[in-house]
Image 1: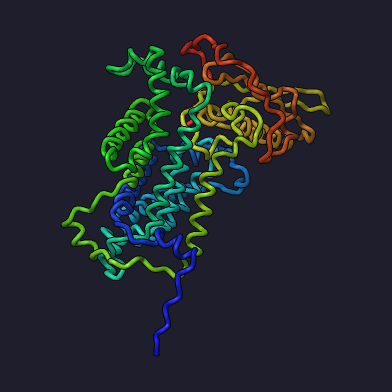
Image 2: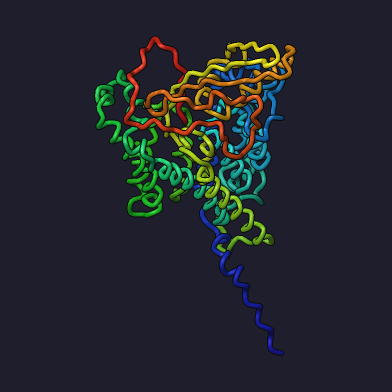
Amino acid sequence: MIPEKPAAPSLFARLTRPAFAPVAIAPLVWFRVAFGAIMLVEVGRYFAHDWIGRYFIEPDFMFKYFGFGWVRPWPGEGMKLHFFALGVLAMGVMLGIRYRLAAALLFLGFTYVFFLDQARYLNHFYLVCLYSFLLAVVPAHRAFSWDAWRQPAQRGGTAPAWSLWLLRAQICAVYFFGGIAKLNRDWLQGEPMHLWLARRANYPVLGTWFTHDSAAYFFSYAGVLFDLGIVPLLLWRRTRWWAFGAAALFNLTNGWIFQIGIFPWLVLGATVLLFAPRLPQPLASLWQAPAPVAAVRSTRHGLTIALVAAYLAGQFLFPLRHWLYAGDVLWTEEGHRFSWHMKLRSKSASLTLYAHDPDTNRTWKTHLPNYINRAQLDEAAGRPDMILQLAHRVAEDFRRQGHPHIQVRARALVSLNGRVDQLLVDPDVDLAAQPRTLGSATWITPLTTPLSARQPPRSPSTPSPASSDG
């Protein structure tokens, strides 16, 4: 009897087979350890600087992301307990202790903190949310972890290729869109880099040079070339180590000049994913089993590919959404967040809200520190959506005081990247009557002031809320 030939694999199976081929797990392990350690340090910084109380306990009002108005801080000392739990979970991820659970809870716990206050948005916090989610998905605990030591059946020297490339794609998106976003007229004319470097003239060694235009142009164009070129150079074996040295120098210099917290370390940790270091052999022999030769099998390849493709599509399409809005995204802020628009604009602003009761024809100039703290005001003054939220908050306060038809108008004078001040919001529009939507806001005034129209430097004694994206 002639044995039947096995059925030929389908076209889909042949196309997706490389995604499930075994690759060395070392890059995933190193990133897991680095990410957990970085998060542990970040939690420690929040306790050391008392940022938990300042940002999440003391404020009476917090700005909310669209659709997340229901997110509220824990009462009492609950936020401190929450951050303590984040530290424990970060240690669990780093050491691989109950790794899957620890990573999933770290993602949920940190993302909750992220959505508490829009004024606390930072690009690297968004990146932390994404990577904590991805780490909960990929099998980065199969080696050099408590789980692998306690449960030998989980040990392995390999992981499916899709897990490594998923983590790699995430940092590639950060670099790519960060570089593309810098191809705008302000950045290519040395702004806002010129403003930022001028404020650092007291830095040792390089401080004097920072005041020259050549420094602003050097850092601006070096930033574009680095963001757009670093990924190909890291993926090419011949330039990999030179590129990693350049990445280390670039990110650490950014951290020194701009004081951007854990971002340089987080990006460097993710950059290691683009090449394949090996676990030191003594550790490898203790903590992992020999790498299997056969390809990693899965009974749900189709679902895995679909989910990975959906995630990557979102990451590579969402940053482009600002093209759906009219106006300059640096000015309107519509589509600016979650798009890796990093260090692209600096805004100095003054904001005043006026409440008017048409029933009594009385007008009040509101005292904004009664509603938000100084750090929140610095962020809100140049952000139209946050100005709208604050106007709604003021209107609610006046309605409780017996003014049911209260109107709120804003006078927001904003300087973008050193331009002469210009009105950001139409001062004749009643913001209390304007709903929050994902559509384009017609009450934002178009940017008409050219970059050539620069204002004189502000006196250090002149208060002016100023903010820049990080």
